[in-house]
Length: 262
Ligand SMILES: NC(=O)c1ccc[n+]([C@@H]2O[C@H](COP(=O)([O-])OP(=O)(O)OC[C@H]3O[C@@H](n4cnc5c(N)ncnc54)[C@H](O)[C@@H]3O)[C@@H](O)[C@H]2O)c1
Image 1 (cartoon, helix red, strand yellow):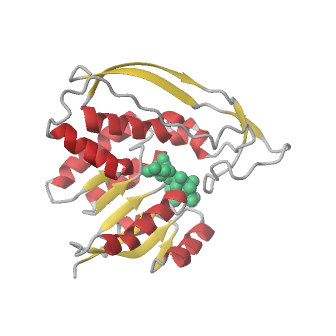
Image 2 (image 1 turned 135 degrees about the vertical axis):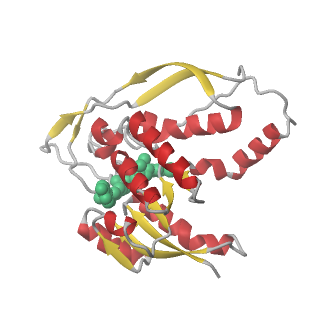
C-alpha cells in the first residue's frame, strides 16, 4: 500500500480538522490510492505543537515549518496557519516538491495569492498537486448541484443567492485574535467566510465579471489576544484587558455579475 507522509503546519482549529481528515480518509475511501501517515506537526507555540503530536497521533513535532519543508520524507504539506504566512510556506513546500493543501483564504494579499498560483503552476508540471481547502465543494448537495448544472439538466443559471452567517464574534468581549487583525488575516468576514461563498458561487456559476459591495465593521474595538490559537469567541478577556481598534470587516454584502450573464 502506497503511503504519503504528511507534515502539518498550524495545530489549532483547522490543524485538528486536517488531522482528523487524514486519519479518517481510509475508513471512508477504500481501496485508497494511498494512505496518509501523520508524520510531523508544527506549531510556532511549542506547547501547542507537543500537545498536538500526542493528541492527533503524529510521530514528531516541531516549531519551525522549515523542518517540514526540508524533510525529504514528507510528501504532503497541510497549511493551517493564519493567512499571512500561507504564501511563504506554500511556495517553499511546492518548490521542495511537496503536494500542498492550503487553508482558505489562499493568502492575505493579492500579490501573495498570485505568487502561490504561479508556484503551483510550475510544480504541476512535475506532477505536484496544490489545493486550497474550500471543503464545502465536497458537500454532497453541492456536488449534485454541480453535476446537474454541468449536464445542463437545470438549464441556464439566471440567479445565484448566497448567505453565510456566523454569530460567534458578535460579543464585543470576544478577543481581538489574529482573525480581527488586517496585517495577519488580510480581511475579516470577507476572507473568513465570504471566501467560501465566493468560491462555491464561482464553482457553480462560473467566474465573476463585476462586483459592487459594502463592508461594515460594527464592533470597532476588542480586547487584544496576543498569538496562540483563535478561541473563536469562546473565551472572554477581562474588562481590564488592553483594547485595540478593529481594522477588518464584520459584514460584507455584494452584488455581482457573472461572466455567463447571471
Ligand atoms: N476551511 C474552513 O472552513 C476553515 C475554518 C477555519 C479556519 N480556516 C483557515 O485555517 C487557517 C487556520 O485557522 P484556525 O482557525 O485553525 O486558526 P487557529 O488560531 O485555531 O490556529 C492557528 C495555529 O497556527 C499557529 N501558528 C501561527 N503562526 C505559525 C507559524 N508561522 N508556524 C507554525 N504555526 C503557526 C498558531 O500558534 C495556532 O496554533 C486560517 O487560514 C483560516 O482562515 C478554514
